[in-house]
Each structure stands twice: as structure tokens, then as C-alpha cells.
Image (cartoon, rainbow over all chains, first blue to last red; front, side, top):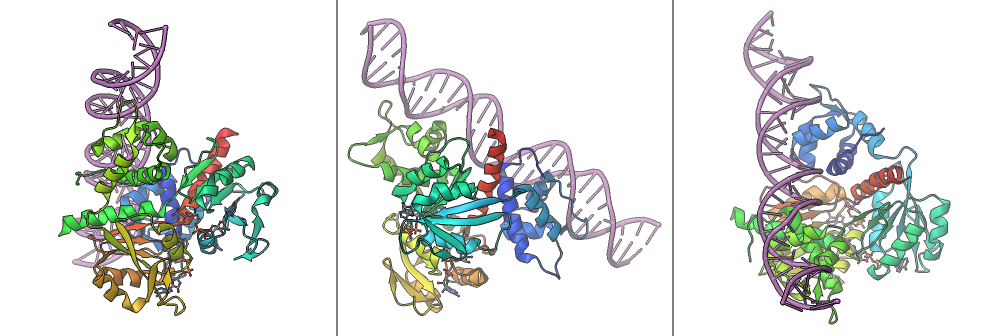
Length: 213
Length: 213
DNA sequence: TTAGCATTGTTAATAAATAAACAGTAACTG
DNA sequence: CAGTTACTGTTTATTTATTAACAATGCTAA
Ligand SMILES: NC(=O)c1ccc[n+]([C@@H]2O[C@H](COP(=O)([O-])OP(=O)(O)OC[C@H]3O[C@@H](n4cnc5c(N)ncnc54)[C@H](O)[C@@H]3O)[C@@H](O)[C@H]2O)c1
Ligand SMILES: NC(=O)c1ccc[n+]([C@@H]2O[C@H](COP(=O)([O-])OP(=O)(O)OC[C@H]3O[C@@H](n4cnc5c(N)ncnc54)[C@H](O)[C@@H]3O)[C@@H](O)[C@H]2O)c1
């Protein structure tokens, strides 16, 4: 299914809705109201209904939204029909945290490979994911048609890893190192930094504190 | 220093500017242009100048911005003068990744304590941070005037940890578990999920692919 | 059977974020 | 020393995101 120009933020929230819905999915509870979803994500019910409107989903006036149906619909919209394959580069704390957290969670995204340079990690399987030597990256990426790369190597290494991923035909990169990367426009790049999150919390906690005291 | 109603996004970018600036800070290079900062963060130079205008910083017309001065000013604005203390709850993959990444990076935020339930971790020091039994949380938090908590325990445990943090007087929480939390309005809550980031990359990579092919 | 209620879906209004436009200025150039 | 260049700083316009407003629906219960 394809919907023209879904807002950036809506895409993000759809992912969050699905995560929350999967969490409350059970035999007993089959439906959910917009205000229930809203409460879980700390947003307004209107926002939820608006997003669902954008993807053309209609709920039941008295019962709310069918959880299972909605999960499926979100999948049809944000997942790729044929599935996408993912690799993690750098099997340290963060790479491992990602893999074990991700395990078994999404059927349309498959974690195919990890890469590292440490001999103790290479040719072993971590949480179902085989780890290869970094030199094999281009080969494995191409062979398995991997289209997304996650970078969790020491930051000095990040630019060369990114370049190698791009040359191997990757379509999207999720960069966890603080090193700024440059990739061509056809590669989607997303970055995240824990310290920025922490500093945001610190700033607004401080501000709140002044406001509420 | 206090600036009224700094936009949310600007606060986030100020943290990113500082990170980028710290990275390029050196004896040789003392100044930087808005377009250089912009390039590192994949935003426009106008955006950078606008943010700097909001915090009242003026650069040099020909040389650009004084890196050191700007780093200091950002600190004056987003850091708390007296500093803020931070604790990590759950010393697993993610908690460790956070602590070792954070180590030595920010002078105004001090990582004071970790908490866990695993006897092998308790009463040991990880990367300079002592780990205590979870039962000691209220005591340690209060004694050390810790105002920010990072939650990296298994998700089922998250709500009780959050409650305990709030009761101990915490002012801000950074939640890495996928469990929705409820905290009073005076506690600032920030959440992050790697899978949402990955799904965003997957979605836009797919979209890009259609657009560029 | 009809008034009241809780909910959805949609449009309209508002607010926030980004980008464009451009004036000002100091250094350099011929 | 007039013109050109490459920036900054600020205002204005545009785009994007959120919130408010409210009509429509169908169940409940008086
Ligand atoms: N963005 C964030 O929020 C965040 C948080 C924590 C860490 N980090 C950063 O993420 C990166 C990883 O952090 P970590 O705690 O997992 O570190 P880590 O040291 O535990 O893991 C790094 C891994 O990369 C491997 N490696 C080194 N060079 C390599 C190469 N050339 N090719 C492939 N693998 C290589 C190492 O063997 C190791 O297994 C670091 O750059 C760190 O600064 C970012
Ligand atoms: N948001 C994200 O992007 C993301 C990514 C990875 C993992 N996660 C989540 O973060 C959490 C931690 O992930 P991880 O990979 O570090 O897991 P982990 O199992 O490596 O670490 C969890 C730690 O918490 C400790 N613990 C368990 N119960 C506790 C309690 N009651 N009090 C204190 N400590 C307790 C365990 O002993 C362990 O050390 C999990 O909930 C996981 O689902 C989130």
C-alpha cells in the first residue's frame, strides 16, 4: 500500500503506535480507543485520530479501533512488501544491545549479519546473527541484498564504514557514532545520540523545576 | 544565563552543535562558519545562524564563530550552573553502552551511580561508576541529590523503577524501555526506541529508492 | 422513543519550525 | 578607492505539525 507524502512525524508515530499495540494485544482486549493509544505515547487523542485518518483507517464508533487490523494496516504502510535486510557494523555494547532487543520483533525486517574486526567475535553467532570480518562486508551486503546498515563502531572508523556501505549498495544508514557522515542523497541517513537526549532531559528538568517550585 | 522560551528543537540542536564543535576543536582551527556547522549536522546554514541569534551569539564577519567561545556559551545556556547528577538503572548492554560513551564527556552532568539486581554487578565499579543494589535506590538518589534517571532495565520492571525514581525526587527520566510510563507533570520524560529509528530508515530508504530509480 | 453520552472523522485555526530574502559589513582586488 | 566577495544577522514568508472545533454516529437508558 502506498500513501502520498505521509508526514515525517506521522511515520515515526505509526511505528510507535504499532509498538504500543503489539504490547497490549491479547485475547481479552481486541479494541482500543484513540485516547488509550494517546495516553501510552503522551500525545493527544486528536493526534492519533488524525494520523489514522491519513492512513485511511476507520475505527468502530463505540468500540474504538481493532488492534489486530490496525497493526496489520500499519505494517502494510510502513513495511516494504518484500521485506528489507539489515546489518550491524560493530558488535560491541551497542551493537549487541540492538540485536538482542530487535530479535523476533519485526517480521519484515531481517537482521542478517554483523561485522566486526575482533577475532573473538568473528565467525560466531550472536543471538541468531552471524558475525563476519569487516573485510567481507561488501561481499555479504551484496550477496544478501542488505539495504540497511547500522553503524556502531568506534567513531573514528565510522566514515570509512559508511563509505563502504554506500559503495556496497546500501539504501539507508542508522548512525550511532557521534561522527558526522556524508552520504549521497539517495541514501537515507538517520542519527541518534544518547548525550543529546540526556542534555534535553537535563535542560527541561531544570526548567520544569523552576516552573513548579 | 537564561533565555525565555528557547524552542524545543533549538535546544536539541545546541547540544548537537556543541558535540560537533568539541569534535573539531583544535589549536589550528579556532573559528568555524555557519555553513561548516550546518554541513556536519545536515541542516542549513540559516538554521544555524538563527539558533545562534536566539542565544544572542555574534560571530566574526570574516572568520565566522569562535569555537571555544561558542562551546562555552552553549554550556551557559543548556547546562545547569550547579551541575546535575545522573544515575543509570539497569547495568546491562545498554546501561554499559551509555556509561562508557558518556564517560568524561560533560563536566556539568555527573554520572554518580548505577543500580542493578544482579549480584555480580553490585558493589563493583564500572567505568568509574559504582553499582548499587536496586533496593538502595531511594537512599542513594536522595543522599547524592541525583536529579536525572536513565532506565535500562528489562521492560516489565520499568514502571516500578520509574515510580521509585519519582518518589525519590528525580526531576527528569530518560526511558529506553518500550514500556509506556506515567509520571507527574513536573517530571520531564524523554523516550527513545531504536526500532522506531530503524523503521524510519526502512520507510524512507524504501521511498528514496522509488524516487531515485 | 427520545435525550444524553462517548466516540470517531474531518475541517478549520493556531503554533512551531524551517527556509528565503535581503541589508549590513569588513576584507580583498584590481 | 570603488567594486566585488563572502560572510553574518534579522526580518518576512512558507511549510509542517499540532490543536481546536464540531458534525455525525450509534448505543444507552430514562
Ligand atoms: N549514539 C549513541 O547514543 C551512542 C551511545 C553509546 C556509544 N556510542 C558510540 O557507538 C560506538 C560503539 O559503542 P560501543 O559502546 O558499542 O563500543 P564498543 O567498543 O563496545 O564496540 C565497538 C565494536 O566495534 C568493533 N570494531 C572496531 N573497529 C572496527 C572496524 N574497523 N570494523 C568493524 N568493527 C570494528 C570493536 O571490535 C567492537 O566490537 C562508539 O563510536 C561510541 O562512541 C554512541
Ligand atoms: N530503546 C531502545 O532503543 C532499546 C534498545 C535495546 C534494549 N532496550 C531495552 O532496554 C532494556 C535493557 O536492554 P539491555 O540490552 O541492556 O538488557 P540487559 O538484559 O543486558 O540489561 C538489563 C539489566 O537490568 C538488570 N535488572 C533486571 N531487573 C532489575 C531490577 N529490578 N532493578 C535493577 N536492575 C535490574 C539486569 O540485571 C541487567 O543487568 C530492555 O528493556 C530492552 O528491551 C531498548
